[in-house]
Length: 282
Image (cartoon, rainbow, N blue to C red; front, side, top):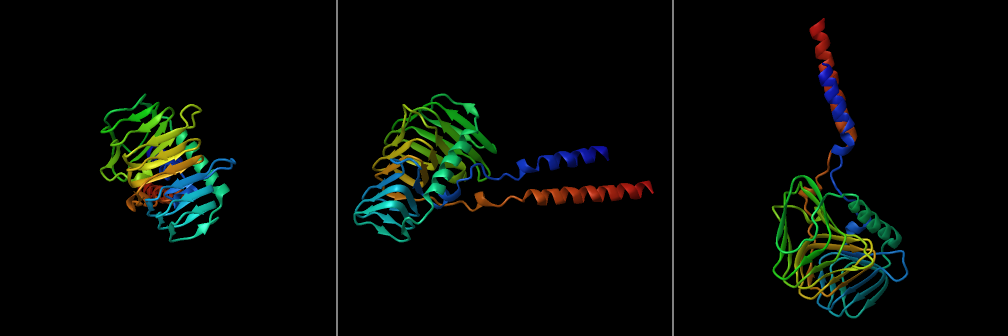
């Protein structure tokens, strides 16, 4: 009986951990495929090249430049919008709280940085990371040349955080691929602010995942394949891209029972065992 009570106590004590399904809270940023927002005067700019088709919404707290022929299927929220012939299906203009958006991106990056796992040093060439629940990694430089592939293999129940502290560049033909059903919203590449390496640059690469930074600019070159990608930055985003999609995995967002549900279950089980134990004694 004492052993059972100890077991129930341990389960109840660990309920906050068990009830934590996600790894990062993106707040308002979750509404966008591209979002750049900052409280700084010169940051928060988003430039979309003329062939971009965004299957979702975009936001820029300062200036949004939409090239001729750009298509945004959702909202295009910005402090200032320069539209050179783009089509926006949803709302346009100052259609979000940019201060909240900036805070949410900064907070998400800070949360990601608290997960300090195995230090991989410099990552280049071909590499593979296999899911095992939640895992976090530290990368010094992320440098993938043309033909190099970083593969993240896992299920919808797996989570990965990669904190990149140094240089970050992907050449044309490089790949960041997700395999096995792991959801892009649960594979996070967080580019930590660096006064020397101030950007994440990629050419005609094929990449998937969530790309986040509080302090770096994202520069996405022509020919990049972004079928399962989203980008959040407190600096700016320059994207000369084509189609950009970010499908949300329903399985990855299955709600986890709240702490109170677990607690009620544990208390109920304890009551049943105590009642049975008393009957045996009587």
